[in-house]
Length: 131
Image (cartoon, rainbow, N blue to C red; front, side, top):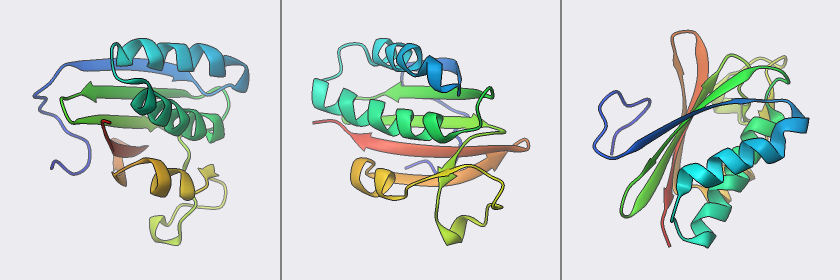
């Protein structure tokens, strides 16, 4: 398993850029849904809920980059951006001014995840097993 932000890809990659504004939520989820293509509905629902929680809690107006890699058994999601929300967890050491979202979202819906930084941006990667 690759930790952090991967630079080498072994499967098809979809890159999206979405606005964290709440009024763009439907549009953002439609982009994610389209990116997931023929992925089974229960897995799509898990991915959409994770993305909506993270993007929905991010700083409004900031662009969030999303990369989705659909593999035969898992889906890898990477999100990055200066205003990206990270889970509210003491081990992540983010300032109180930084946006956060409930940790249960990742604990319940992602099989593996970790937060990271790349080129001054906040980032998070997640693996979601396919049903």
